[in-house]
Length: 229
Image 1 (cartoon, rainbow, N blue to C red):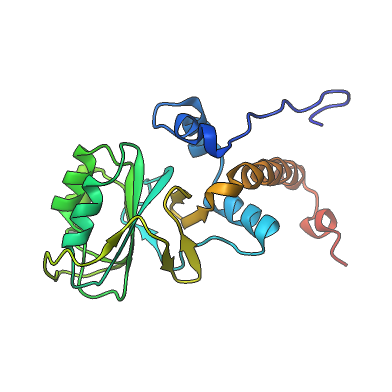
Image 2 (tube, helix red, strand yellow):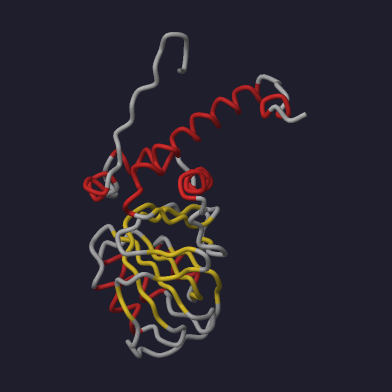
């Protein structure tokens, strides 16, 4: 409760059925989530619900202002094969986030031209569990790209990988249709089947953090708030 006798308003549930509608770039749901909820809170909620944090370890944005949330289209490829990545762009739906899992961080599978193509197709962003290049051009495009590494050399357009299958990014498995959220802290993946449950927990965490911050600003000890002796 916010005040005595005042019950917090119930938030709309975010089920797989209304996923695309709620997380389209222009929806109010997108604006609320992108302005309030962070990957830190989402990761805490994932750990509470599943015991796993959902983090794609080591993946960071090329520009800290990038913040994305949407449905995953997945690509599995070798670092030497950027051709599969280009195919993945054109097999994605408008509003999707392309998640690319590579076998290593050298060479790069993504750059300015791929970003331009993805932006033209209406993708919300690209996550590379591997390496990218052309950082200056990507920043100028203002197309959200997240990666583990940056390197200048690229491989070949072999197109020998796979699209829309389960991919492994460190300790986290990403399936097509999973929810992906990214901000300056990194990337979190939420399995499609538990989106509703995880976001319900995320909102609880958000509300609890707001209460704690209010007490801290009023001079209360963090030790006392957490009841640490």
